Length: 396
Figure 1: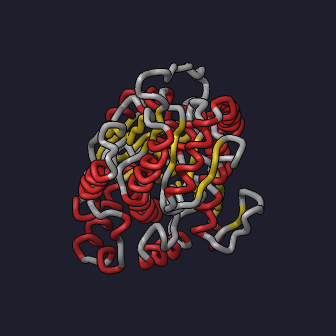
Figure 2: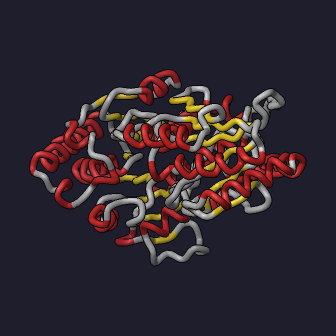
């Protein structure tokens, strides 16, 4: 049995952490022994323990752990205290790898990639970066993009990306239609492995015939680039044609974005939508809420690295309206499983929602096609087998 250590700098339940949890629940534990290291305590820790995954916490200095990826720059990266904290932590992680006889280190976040990459070098353990962020200047500061692309040539043995879009952002010289596996910089293995979700549950038909009319929802943490403000602008247009429509914004602010949440709530009042828009806050029953929707909307204003929420909506049999950027076009077949609309524009989004509400039968067919597409291409079982194949390739 091969010991694989998984490392993530956060224990909050964001998209990457949900994807990691899905993977660890489906990895072949007869062949691989997974051990998770987190740099803080939090919901992910509890969920991993519930799943029976061995998990350890090695606390990271808050000067590093609290730095948001969208505020990274050379000055923040090279601060003596932060640099020393990273090096100390990497040494502790390297000792952990040796103590547990780890044969592979699998990192799951940008900070984990850097720290884990150093630790892997110190412990002489191969390192997989599981890249779930687009390394591009519309997503990260330019200095962070340059630095991360440079480190990608030095630290990891293999880089897995959650979409072709994420791969192309990291390695622009790659061609969009080439083989999934290719030799990257300095011999690094580059491979696309789309995130997967459980698909074995049967779709529960939920009646939405109620006084509030059709339900349209957006799922995700409240953040400017997630586009809740665009969704509200579209909702105002849809509400004019469907006065009984009910809109849900499912999620809460994370990573210090409470100011944006306050602005969005104020925008809702200004648009006169307070009676038909519900802010649910953080919810543990997101799949149940998605099942109750008529339409799932994805409104990101910059290219999403993948679009896990889109997949969750499709597996629930819901037609989706999603912005056409990043990895989302790899998931949604425009006009077949939903509609793709331009990023940052509320009018096309509203028109697509209206189109689905006006054609209930067509929307139902799109939902069924979307569910089948997820079962064929984005199941967690398929993802786990692909990741295991990478392990087999890297380990003797």
